[in-house]
Image (cartoon, rainbow, N blue to C red; front, side):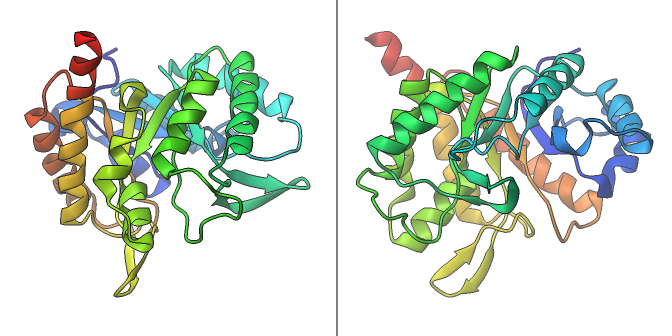
Length: 288
């Protein structure tokens, strides 16, 4: 089985059957898939079977929703044991989850709530990331999240905050380029300046997605629309600095015909192939 590289697609039930019936040769720009383990663990029937059949054709990475790395409740050891077995069976090269709070008092928030950008959060998140990593046999990468109000107590830049967490935890970064764009647009920041302060040498994967213009000066990260031109441009700028790391298209709602999704995949593939194999950040680090 090939390694995860090039352009991937977040596997959703809406087009699972379509992918089961297609051959990899029919979709040359689609090089890998990503799944949410929570949708398949401890579950029988057609969905795990569809996942198995897709795994026969494409390599997979995984993206979780349940670690709540910013929470204060103890990490769920049973969830981590089940997740470890799932990742080993799937052969995932890494597992990613979010720098956020996603549950409290035993209840899921059904949202990704940001942490204050400060040193206390850095230490808290890093400790829990290391604890989770100790329970998994697969490397852990963390994702930067979108936010609509700066959490109280924040005194770090978003890029510096993410960089500090990754350095303290010794983990990799799953960089969501669309989230950076959404945050920069809503809060009046420069997206490239934020990205330049991210630990680009730790990026193992990127996400891109669409968002919704709710007002002229406010956008909502929905994963329910087509990618906009500024995000395509920001992705190309970032890939020039990271090199050809894998890029994933996320689409969670208002899912169009698969041919429409595939056209986005083809455009992303062209951007990825135009990027250098080794990015500027790696070259600078090697030069010393």
